[in-house]
Amino acid sequence: MGSRRQTLSHIIIAFLLVSGISFFCLAIPAQDSQISHLLPDVLGWVSLFNGLIVIVGISLTADQATIIILTAFLLRAALAIVNAYVVPLPYSQADAATFEAIGWMWSQDGLIASLDNFQSGSALYPWLISVLYALTSRSSLMIQGFNVLFGSLIVWNVYLIAKLLWGMRVAVRAAWFTALIPSLALYSAVTLREVAIVYPLTLAILYLAYWHRSKKTLHLVFSLISLGVSISFHTGIIVALVTLMFIFLLRLLFSVINQRNLFLYTGSLLLISSFVGMVIISGWGLQKIGGSVENISLEKIAQAQQVRARDRAAYLEDMPISDSIDLVWQTPWRVIYFLYTPFVWMIRTSADLAAQLDVLLYIGLTISLYRSRRYIIADPAARAILLMLLALIIIFALSTSNYGTALRHRAKFAPIAMSLTAVAPWERRLRGVQRD
Image 1 (tube, rainbow, N blue to C red):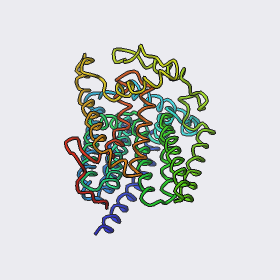
Image 2: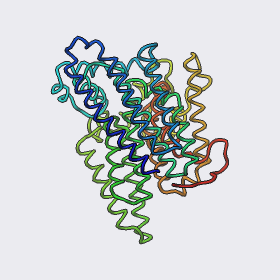
Image 3: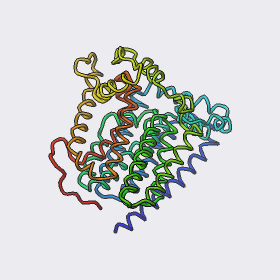
Image 4: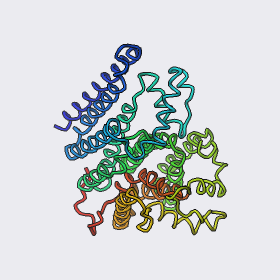
């Protein structure tokens, strides 16, 4: 039965790819036809429909996750439709509108000119938009449709990671929470690059977990490639890659002491180090720090903090980092503000009040991670994922001084944290672990 469902899933996805490519090819001559004014809406609805078919095809492979992933998709699709036809959603203006406008501008000179604008970093997302627009027509809903699809697939990745680590019961719970987190649903329904960063990041975590179970080099390669894709959209993700390299360095040292798995960890460390070296030498994804790690300094961190400490949502604006001692004692405070602001005494508007739901979520996640600590520490895969998560939170916390920005940045890491929560806030211990 399982093999039949997988075969049907593959057939559905293959059919979708063929039909989707065919439609977008037909959209090219339609740009200059009498129905060109209908193209934006048609492209948007077709992208949403195609995404739905992909989700249906994937969900067929797991009965327990079918309703969850469909709910995640429908929630995100509904928000995208509301944003397109009813009222602009929060975060749908400013950066989101700018990304879309730049993509449209770059597409005006044709596909070849759009391709010439290729670069990693924050410009990669509007570059992808420009390529799609050059091939079809301007349709913000089409871009939202792709975000809705991959935002839903983040939920699928969380389900798979948690299932691999903790079993089916925990995986279902983690997937439901991830599907219904308001901020994750919102960022999947507007033209922001959050999904482009988080989807490959969670995919990298998934393949890392696979590697710990199988020890297959190909799984580690896929994890590194996925991390590379995530880094290409945001420089800060490189800290996860560097952390992974140090994790494997420590494991190699322990294997030398214990005289076990020397070949495994030597080869894995060489692979990871080579990948890190290629990223650093090429400057891939490092535009935010001027294309080189040599530009990283306390002065640059302090400058980033001052730039972001603006408007009424600013915090710790009077605490610039001036030396390494400041870096040490300020880091815990900045992590606390990054994860849990706006505090109650910061509430000034209805938006601040709504943000308290987000704060409660991260308090719950923190409690869950704390209560899951002995299970995480006992599992090498979970331990590695936790260290990468902590490194990411610290690096983003150090460069953030505004809780509006913190709300968006910390949402990048909620799926990873959710996949690690073996014990819920209301539980005391992990029950009934069954890894399939």
